[in-house]
Length: 466
Image (cartoon, rainbow, N blue to C red):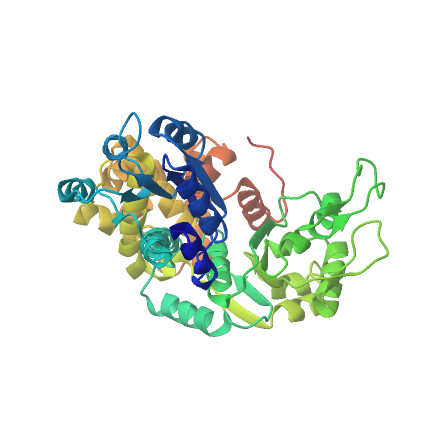
């Protein structure tokens, strides 16, 4: 029995290796190339062979290889010289060298050059496969560590910041209810981080499907049903083909219905039916489609007041309000502002590619004294603006006394929070010469939110300012 035949008998006894690995075999012996390819092809998704360094280089330029198995002595350019050249190019492939010559100096040179292993010919298949196992295990471990670092980075960027009693309670509730499939209603002013809370609920839920966010107030009412439930071809003008809705895309995951208070009454009826029957019906279809998407809704309105005013269905409100999370406004937790400021400063400095800024005690004090009608969104916008302009918050406010004069004089003690909010928003709008769009950007809220505030304050009077 030949050496290659004896190794073939052991082929099926090797433990399986993850298939998402590519291998390149470089050897000038056709028999060795054929044998190794046959052996490794049962383990890996891609196995290629080459008889020389020049041929191997052409293959490597067309395709990335996780592992190279290379004979040291090859016609023309030697395998070890090629590997040293790859190291200079920051090669990212592991390499196992083979040789039929017991040259210890060459072996030492190969290992010093960064080779993963060195195997003498003739060798047993187990010996080669153990070397391959070691390489792949180390490579997969590196990949796993990289993915974990990325996951940590993402989780840090989406971490709920705050150690105040109010936010500690919010985080406790999230941890408790996240593993359930119950509907959750998140209430809070604009800019308080309702979507962040929804994402945290999804992350901790263990659900493997995607997180799909929908702003109910940003989609035209006549299109909302199609966006959420999908439609069939020909169901309305412009529906040229079947289309899945966002509820279908969120299958196995979470669908986040932001600004649920903006949803038209007709759609509220349809949503109630979905919540009760766990199925949807695409526009123009008579077929019910079962869905498995957890519903998390959010609103910056008082839904109980909307119900009394006839703007929101009472039955839908009770169905959504199974579990309720109320996010406190930033002005009610000033002790969290320093942590948030540090978080946004680090994050924005990295995103903007600038040196991280260290704020003074005066800056932090000014930030804590501000009322933040736009909440966390306004704070982040302020930090970004200060970094870009090179002006610390204390200096920024000093040059805008018309906007922040209340920082010096204060508000009457008998004023409620709504009075303070109205006065501040009015001052900002006046500082922008009545330009509500510019004022909304400065406050960190949407223009729609600002218009709604004015309607509440002015008894429904509309405004046509820019």
